[in-house]
Length: 375
Image 1 (cartoon, one colour):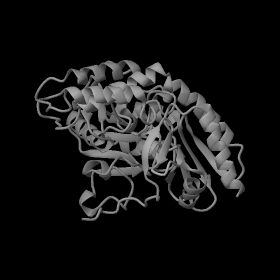
Image 2: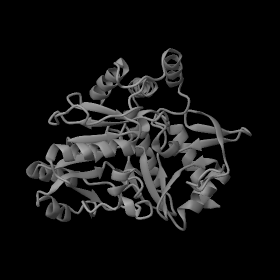
Image 3: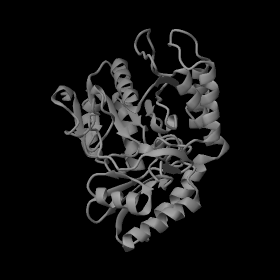
């Protein structure tokens, strides 16, 4: 049996990692500025994380959600305190797509409405409902076409206002920062105005923080830079540092009924152990502050380099454009400079490193980037 092709692969197989480095079988070291799609939040093989999962799997790795699992409440308590949303409730799932699916369902239950307003360039996942609010015809099959979804441009308040004021929408879903679209930031004023429109029209505001959350921008969630509080917040990726876990943070205004939501694997013992370990490290090592400090260095330094353009982002969620195809540029970074980065669109390079990337490693990346540009 062959594997169904999914991505265009580099001819490199990391077999181990530590911190912000991964190593191939031949011992070649690679600086990891991508973290596997923003998943590696506390670095590869962090000792506390490894110990927590090892200890948990030696006790019990899984049982269904038909019994009590005190780790779920421990995770919810820690997440609530660290994020500033301790009055919200938490529904645990396995991925960002699942989190967005359930947030959309909750919004529809809560309002009794069907329509959803989404943003041009959005990416919310590949499952049916999530891909329905994703603005990408390549992954939205005829089965996924959703007549209840309308797309408007990011930061176009007039277009969003025209739709929301009809009072027909159960939700508007917005990424804290658009990642797949190439690190596109909603302005703080735009988020403020959208929040007011949703309150005025009884529409749920869903903030997709799957990629932009969990400390990546120097705040726990990216929308907190704007000082707003959404009705529903979705998270995943960095939540488990590689172990599949996601969640929906749900406003206390929402009423739950038995059977409304459910999951087999969501919130399992190993996932919760991973999630708690991540929060431990984030607090102990002050990773939000580090992401802000190192991100500021990278953003300011990248803006001074010739031959890269339109540097943007927040914290350790950074994009910049290159001349020519970004895919070729990133491939050369891997093979010639031994640096992993991400891409978005034709010209954009994405940086999504672990939150404990230090200044020395950031400087190392800048040196290797300049060497490639000089060549």
